[in-house]
Amino acid sequence: VLLHSDERGNFRVDGLSPGTYLLEAQAPGHARASVSRLRVPVEGPLTVALRLAGVIEGFVVDAQEQPVANAEVLVGGSPSLGVTTGARGGFSAEVEPGPHAVSARRGEEAGALDTPLLVPAGGTVRDVRIRLGAGARLEGQVVQKRSRAAVAGARVELSAAQGQGARCDALSDAQGHFEVRGLPPGSYTAKVSAPGFVPTLRRNLTLAQ
Image 1 (spheres, rainbow, N blue to C red):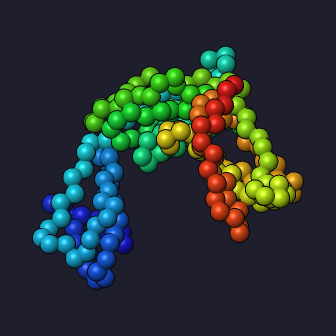
Image 2: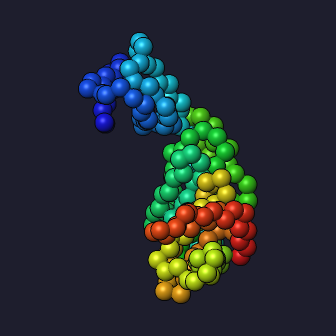
């Protein structure tokens, strides 16, 4: 159900069956708020408090310090966020207050900040600069645990540690092989799934340029 609050911030939802719901609230200039286990019916009015959002502004450049257009900038957090650089390599992202890992990629090039950015509520962190270089690569094979037979069409979902930054997917080929290119260096978790198999996690995969 999607609805908007009125000029006083009030909202009302009718016709809900009793049960447990996820409620999310967001507004321009504010960080998203959520109630993960909202039990309906609720006794009395429900108050949802929104915090002011923060903003990250910066540029993506190549190895020669030239601006990079159409690069994907990934901002880690909960939830993570992706934006695209403009013609002059600039980007702006409205984020939750708190620490955020920031990385960027275009094609097989990638780069990341060495440390997370601490973004204050209602504040702006300016002049962030991400330099692209040769991205890291992960390749491997998906096989059945007992027979070691190749598993074709398995999905490999790769995410940076603790959800802080890059995410990408790959499918294994007929021989079970997969390859992911253009990743910022760092620690990753791989989730591997395929029809008829129990999903598997591989943690602490460290990739370097």
